[in-house]
Amino acid sequence: MTTREPNHSTGFEGRAAWQLLASARTVLIATHANPDADAVASILALRLALAEVVSNLICLTGDGLVPSSLSFLPAADLLIREPATVHETPDCIALLDCADPSRLGPFFHLHSNWFDGQIPMVNIDHHITNTRFGHVDLIDPNAASTTEILAQWFLTVGVTITPDIATCLLTGLYGDTLSFQTTSTSVRALELAALLLRLGARHEEIVNNLFRRKPVSTIRLWGAALSRIRVEPPLIWTEITRDMLRETGARPLEGEGIVNFLSGAEGTVVSLLFYEQPEGWRVSLRSADSLVDVAQLCQRYGGGGHPRAAGCRLPPGEAARRVFLNDLRAIVTELLATRPHSR
Image 1 (cartoon, helix red, strand yellow):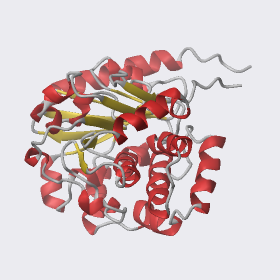
Image 2 (cartoon, rainbow, N blue to C red):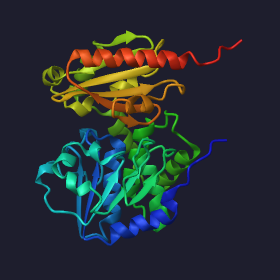
Image 3 (tube, one colour):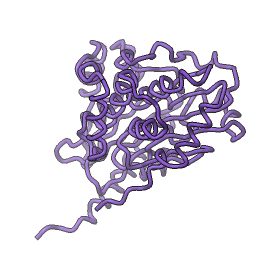
């Protein structure tokens, strides 16, 4: 039997977190740069939950970016797209799906003094590498998504889960489990999905936007990235360069699903996607084997995430990337060698 950590969202911490946020006049609700469905859906769900009790809500992703596939979410049009325009100091901060404040990226660098502990912070996350930086931490590494933690919390403190809130919560759950395909899918997650559907979550709208509809630029970008695949067992990897984005007319966020598509390719265990950025490479990794914890591997390079899905950053240039690949291949090969051979 798997031992679960206590679900802090249902205990004293959950009530303390709600009181801290609900008693503030201005609350900043933020999530990491390069946001995914769970990140965006989390801040929108919390915004909807607090809208009637907090007079001023500032909601944003760390770089102001939001995938076009998430524009259908309720209140998505209220997200601030230019973080540099935010100057009002909040009374309280809620960071969602964010293992460390620095993951806010550009917004953190603009307002790093807001995250030095003087402003009360509520930290809600499911990453095992979370640094537990909040005045109140609602952390459950066993949760399939941050929206799963939010749902448990809302039910505990008496938030009415409307169809709009339910739609946000189910979007995050679907997004982080790839529609219940990942190993983080649990009985609790499936039961929550059923509850959210009963509460009015718009299933078809979520599925259409997350998994079916896509811009032509996305298809072109994927084609370009897949044509550059390199298989170096036990690794498979490809890249998205700035030239590729320019040639396809795509935005960086349109490449986010490629690393999941590569995961599990025959003869490989770890898939990687390198994103070229002005300051270097952003790397996303996926593990197809429970022996290989990519979160631990990424921590060696200042990154983190989940055992099966993590990321880090590398300096610019091909040399840094080649060193990383060689190190990773050696580590993964050594880990796989520890598996007992069946007789």
